[in-house]
Length: 329
Image 1: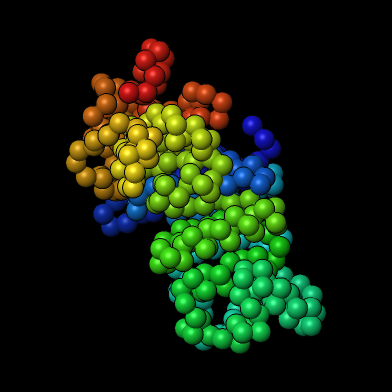
Image 2: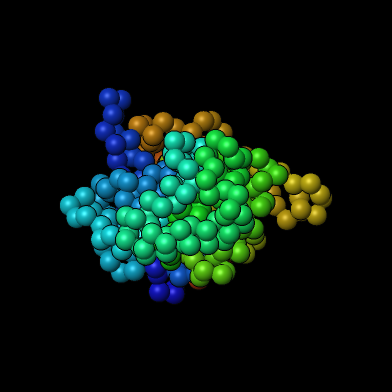
């Protein structure tokens, strides 16, 4: 495996509530190599956004390690060095709530430059214009506007420009297109791909849209109820899914042609509803909905096992099928 820029090991984040303990993240391990895009995919409540918040330092982890460029950054007892905060940035899901409506775009972009002591006042103005032009917004037209005067896609471009202000090497994208019109989503995705190539960026791309990952990510990780189910290189992930939950997600992707339908795995069916995060069933958290479950699934929580180079799966039934030589059902 290539040297990692971000390494997450046995990460847990639990929240005590009146109803019980919410295990938002329950022992996950993954890494992201420099220049790659890891797509972290899951339904609402799976824990993917909490993972992002722990990585950027919004929440301290309950246990486990987060390492960025080999430095331990995930701890409640140590302030992150300022250079880490400038090198690891986040773009939030809703630009309407992440941009201060009382500040102009110039004021918004100036904040990270001032906090990180980047340049003189003249240098900062030049940098702000450069950032806006970088995200395809004419600087002279947008610099003195307020967020409410521009569209949703333009707001997200400003949020991206703000994230890039400190010349980061790693950007965490928390569903950056889900709050946007479909007509704008493609433009934002193309912009992200171009900037990654030009600036040599590494992305952790969090989304619930699995179909988006085929053209954006280099690796895909599937999350369910605080745990990772499957991690694989993107091509193998779409061509050879193994976990029953992964197959269910892939088989439900809408398509527009018979050729695309033929590429999808056989229709996978689950039963029941997603369990409450304060009452997660013992054993495999997916077993109560899985038609492929066996006797072990309700008792033993499966470990993540590497079934091929870079392809990890956490499922008793799927692994038994792999080891027997039958391959994925």
